[in-house]
Image 1 (cartoon, rainbow, N blue to C red):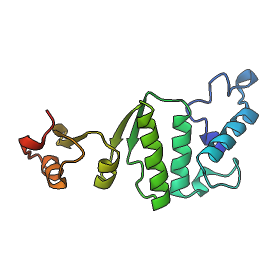
Image 2 (cartoon, helix red, strand yellow):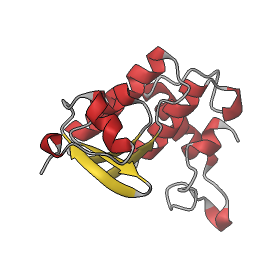
Image 3 (cartoon, rainbow, N blue to C red):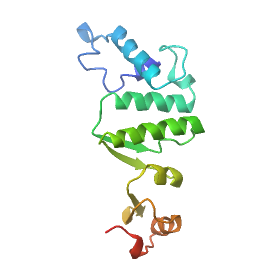
Image 4 (tube, helix red, strand yellow):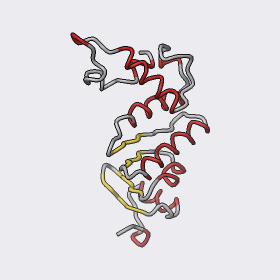
Length: 159
């Protein structure tokens, strides 16, 4: 799909994007896509290129722009920086921290321990589908690792 098509995925049936007789209001959608691309520094020639031609970082920025456009109360970020370059990682982290700073709930699901420490107010660990610990982000990595394997040192856990 093109960038303009991607910019309204899941929202294409809304009044502001639907033209008459079920057709899309393409000019409005392209204007939205152009704004999202500009605001989130998505590197693309124009709104009509296929999203698959973008780098992973630019694809991720477009998705983030689209989802933040709705001003969500809760943002679920699952592996938000997997496979991205350093510049794109920094951009995504900044966006997530801004959302948190604006009072939105951000649920970060990540296998990247650096990312978890950098972005989290609290850390929950899971083992075999059960929560094995809740920690402050200043807890030592070995404590987190122990909890991830089902073990736990009770004195570091948040109560």
